[in-house]
Length: 453
Image (cartoon, rainbow, N blue to C red; front, side, top):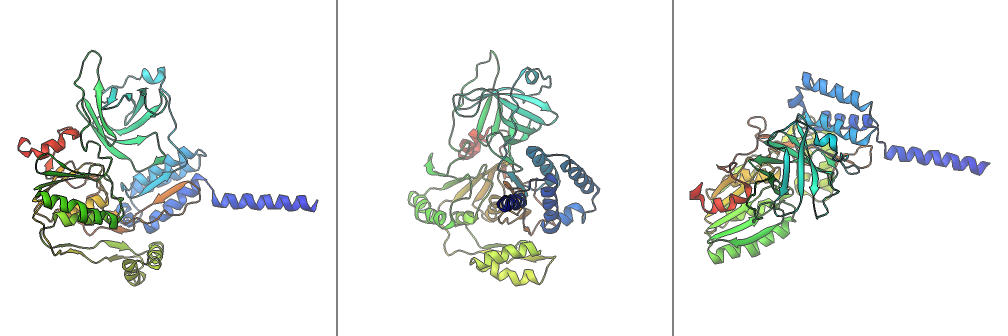
């Protein structure tokens, strides 16, 4: 009897411990996120008027009410997403890595929907057998159902991706991964859909269309460096995720010597769909530098939580974080500016003489920071489309702790030096030459033959 009672108490204790470590109450996790945003997000006071903005008060009330009524994990994700969307900051990221979007199989009810525009219809991916039917589900949501595939994209009739926006521009929710608030963007250009995974061509009954071929850089999905054409060198960087020292070694010992030995005048740096990453982008300055420059430092928000992260980084050996700590500790509740970034290099290379940087609406974060630096060089011209606008608030650390296992939530810790004067979030950095009217797979040829623009 004593053993049974001890076992029963042990089970209660373990159950309570498990619940404490994995409490997926939507209300609890939403409350944790709201508390963190209102305490530690550098843009909170400005965007909510110190929490008094009527729209913020309303959305906060609505999501709290909705969270109290749901027990469905996917439903909770969308409630939290709705709250975070108020801030319009792509650097506030929430992921449920245990939940994928719920499938909506294609059926007669879907097929008979009457809403029609230029985005609806049958589309085939260029260079692939994958064919989807895009149906408008409501005012701002389209689902792409799989009609044909010989690849492992999913079952026929399932949703391949959802498009959220309008018939011309939209965010893309992939159904092959976890639920995330960080969604990349795409656009329709006539009979083409252009998105990070490639280009789609509209299929119309009785109309034969010339087949398009996949070209270099169309998706920019793999790190690539090679000479192209006569007098041009191509460097495609889909993400800044290579270790800084390794990337710098590649630039110094491989790419720069190749460009110098061949006296290559024109360097193309393709950053399309590069959402950012680490500080490896600084190595690119070596190839574009033509004069000294400096830009002001960003402002770190001095809260106890952010100071704690700086302390952890300092303990791990970061000299910069260690240097910042005393200033942060003596300015709790305020902002502390970092030192300016100053570039003064010993050598200016004769080649390349011209640097063309390609951007689109999925370029963000450290990619945009690199563009701010690159603009100081007279060698540089930016081509393509506006960037995503994900830089006003930046410097992300590890995920914040939430009660529900599988939830990952991050938010910025600093604001840019220009944020209060001329913010770029959700506007982006504009190119010097806008190529929006051309399909992305034509951009490199157009840049090489710029006189045709």
